[in-house]
Length: 132
Image (spheres, rainbow, N blue to C red):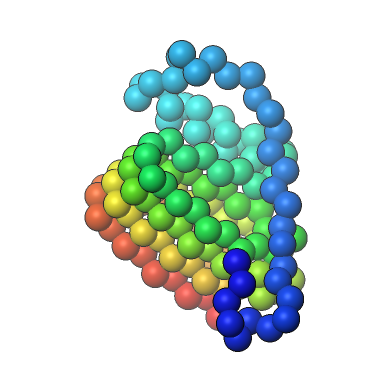
């Protein structure tokens, strides 16, 4: 994503996701949270992961190459903006939104936010976080 004023270059990150064997007929409201927890555990082994279950969810990530992020959005119309491409430090973050019409907007990473886990449960919640 290029925005005017950001300079002449854009940083890209490659997300490595390990393929899984999954019987989609067995995924329902009772098993989806177990599936997400399993994915969170595997994320530490394989790298960043994004799981979105629902309609019209959106995740816009601008990451540096050392970012390890786990994103889980369960519900409809959830949005995540995560930008930490301006630092070269290693960052580990987990963001979970469970509900509908939630917005999470995170900019920057620092020693305080490293390892932070954000969990939003409910509808129509908004979180703005700035780390400088």
